Amino acid sequence: MTASVFAAERRLFTPATSQADAIPLIFAFPNEYSVGITSLGYQVVWATLAARSDLEVSRLFTDVHESLPSQPEILGFSMSWELDYVNILGLLESLEIPIRSCDRTSNHPIVFGGGPVLTANPEPFADFFDVILLGDGEILLGAFIDAYQEVRHADRQTQLRHLAQVPGIYVPSLYTVTYKSPDGAIVRIEPIDSTTPARIEKQTYRGNTLSASTVVTEKAAWENIYMVEVVRSCPEMCRFCLASYLTLPFRIADVEESLIPAIKRGLQVTDRLGLLGASVTQHPEFESLLDYLNKPQNDSVRVTIASVRTNTVTEKLAQMLTKHDTKSITIAVESGSDRLRQIINKKLTNDEIIQAAINAKAGGLSAIKLYGMAGVPGEEPEDLEQTVAMMREVKKAAPGLRLTLGCSTFVPKAHTPFQWFGVNTQAEKRLQFLQKQLRPQGIDFRPESYNWSVIQALLSRGDRRLSHLLELTRHYGDSLGSYRRAFKELRGQLPEMSFYVYDTWSLDQVLPWSHLQGPLPQATLQKHLMTAIEQFTQPPQQLLQTASCL
Image (cartoon, rainbow, N blue to C red; front, side):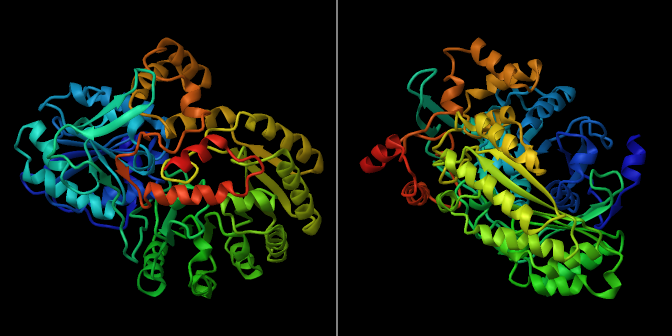
């Protein structure tokens, strides 16, 4: 099976021939091959590493792997989904590597990790990694390998101390966390000595050539798709949104110099194209890209587009997608309430949402999927009623268009203005309310699992004490009941689940990621938070009290 999986790949780069003393490196994705090879981030990092002659790179997935070195010096993981930590621990064990960094010796590889989950808040997973890369691979990968080469033959502690000097490289074992008590809040996070930087700053690539697929394969979850990154980050800055705040500033691929040439390369090996980005249609030259895709030579190309900004859904866009074998479009609306959209900084009106549906239908699309959210900070029951009313208006304005509302529960994310809020305890009931109101109207309502949102919140606001909990839950299963069982077993050794998931944290509280600098300083995030709170019907007194003391 392994040979046929890798044989099916059509590569768009040429791996380097490894030199005699090349570093043996395993680059792993903690999931099945079909999932991992569909990750553009994994593809690009693999190709970047494989292009170096000073590395001998082998890929590892949970179901298949290339020929692995008997003594790898470096083992890397790309982590894009929180619950994949279970597979990371399993792969470490399969390679006979201790799962905790403190138990590794010079006989074990340096274990590094990267990807959106670890860049946002690596702390729940920090004890499993020797090194964590915070930010964009374009900057970090080369710096990491070059720094390792300089201390390749030194002892492990010297290697880690040297790597920690590189901007964006976080070595968790060189930092100590002090708590008020074993189950209390964090008092401080500090380096073990003055030679280690007190803060680690996320690294940001600012170029105008963005990522594109390095391999196309029929074995991918998205079969034979060639992906190009049109934009990175999002200019809207919705106050809950990790995809915007963590990846600032908004960057665009140059259409003529990089985007169209990249698309041409991909279309030489496949007829399926994926345009990626948090806000693809907000590329200032998106019309030029549309015109290119509408050329006769591209008539047979199937185009998939990521979630688009509502007011950019034109009839021309819908016609292009229809022509290229796409039947639906996805837009994030969050709510039908103007007040709630002001709270989250969603610059959008119901009229624009309705017009997007009308344009989608006029352009030949058969379906539109809206994304909403329940339990947003400041949300009141009447806001949900306004969402129901908006969905009815959309259905009425575009009859015959299949209408879906996907809805998640608000989950606080690090480095966003809403990181201090917890999950709304009424969120599950609010999802049930929307379902009861919308399904009889013939609207397909698809709620995301509330229990999964609770686990996500736990991991997104967790600290290092959760590592012991994660070790327990991997044996119990990934259900919410498993996490509750583990919390019960560890009572007194870490805070209750409610502390991480439901509590609103004070602004003077030391956050688990306070030593990790994102794109915006905490003071700026707090200003954005205060602007949101001005729109609340019932302002959160705890936040206002701590804000007045700062």
